[in-house]
Image (tube, rainbow, N blue to C red):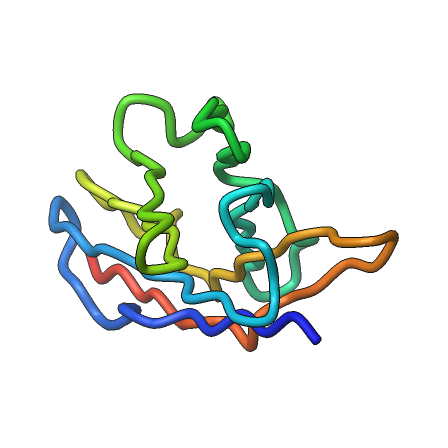
Length: 115
């Protein structure tokens, strides 16, 4: 059973930074593609950043140049470094992965950016 646990969220002022972590267990982590999503109140969940098993990354236009996704396969962890945060980044952030036809999500971590 794959388990994902996000951490690192919190309250930060506009212009500040946060680093989110997504710790995985129960999977051949180094092979997994990992996505970071976010969901703001009243909005649909959206893909923010993606890192493949071979380290290829992709970002939503809204976060390019501000967010960086990385992975440490030795620690079974993916990180999302978020810089120059704005109130529009306020959301619950989730990581996810697919394995053997099933999709797995973490419980999410709240990020709140004050103006």
